[in-house]
Image 1 (cartoon, rainbow, N blue to C red):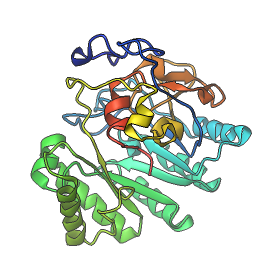
Image 2 (tube, helix red, strand yellow):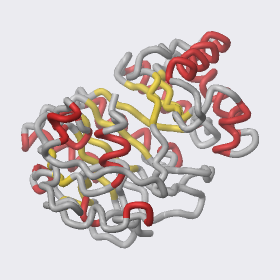
Image 3 (cartoon, rainbow, N blue to C red):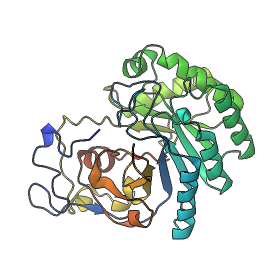
Length: 317
C-alpha cells in the first residue's frame, strides 16, 4: 500500500525536500527533544473506519505485528543514545489484536516509561487475556499506563457513521470496564463534524459525566481533537519563513519530539519513521536504528502542513 506524495489537489507541490513548488526553501524540523517513541503494533484492525489515517482494516497487514523482543531492542537503543524519552506509545491497527501487546507494554513500564495505548476499546481489548493483562499492569504500575480511546464523536450517530453500526455501544462498554478497573483513560476525537471546539469539548464533557468517566474534556492532552486528513483539499507548503509568519516554533511540531517504529510485511527488520501518520511514504523512513532517525525531517507532505503546523495537532500527550 502506497501513499501519494502529492494528492491531486496539490499537484506540483510536495515534490522536492529542499524547495517548495514556488522555489522557496522548505521548512525542516530537527529531533530536538525526543520524548515519545511510538510503535505501530500492526495495521490489522477489527473494524474498517470510513476515514482511517493509515487505512487499517481486518485485511490490511501491510504493517505486521511487532514483537516484544523487537520493542525491547529499541528500548535498549534509547538508553544507548541517551534519548530523554518519557513515553512509549502504541498504535495500530488495533493494538490489542497483537498477541504480545501486554508483554510489550510491560517491557516499557518495567524500564520506568509511561505507556500510552491507542485503542477502540472494543472486542479485542475485552478478551479475558487482555483484560487480565491490562488490570495487572495498571495495578503494578499505578498511573503509568493510559489507554486513549477512539471516540470519533460524542454522539452515537456520528461515531457509528465513521466506525459502523454498534461501534459506539461497544466502545462505551469497554470504557465502563476500564473505569471500573481503575485504568486511566483519555479520548481521541475528530473535528470534522462542523462544530466549534467549545461545542465538541462540551459534548465530550457531557458524555464523560453521564458515564462517570474521569476524563477532562477541556484538557487537550486528555481529550485530543484531531483534524481530518482530507487529501483532496489543497494545503500550503511550509517554508522556512512560515515559522516567523505563523509565530510557531519548529520544536512544537511532532517530528521534533517523536519517532515511530513499524515492521513492514516481508521486511527483515523494523524501520524507524519520522511520523505516525505517514507509514507508507518512503521518504519519511529514516532507517532501521534510532541513530539513523536523528536526522532532520523535511516537511514535504500535505499532512505536515494540515495536521501538524497549521492544525497544531500531535499524537503524543
